[in-house]
Image (cartoon, helix red, strand yellow):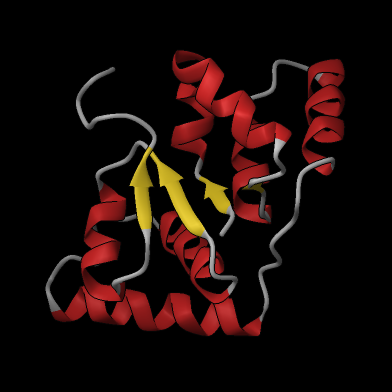
Length: 134
């Protein structure tokens, strides 16, 4: 099973270089549009943007399709039923939905994915122990 790495994992990947490189080399880390948009948003200029975009295009891609969109809306509704819909961002919910419909594990460093996992039951993993880095 592949991983869909959330932006929170990407930003902390340098702290687990060996594990991260192993997953990348094995093509086990996938990308999706919401994560790409967030990562590219943080680029420092045109050259940095295009270099990163080129690197991201080499990764396995999980599409945001109708099934993922429907799953995201259902997840937000289930969170609302628990009065927790204002915790995870819409992007977090989309990323989790894309992972769910493509049988991928969400790799993250963001407590909001715990709330999503409680309502979906889907597999998710912290990149490293929660609270171990700022």
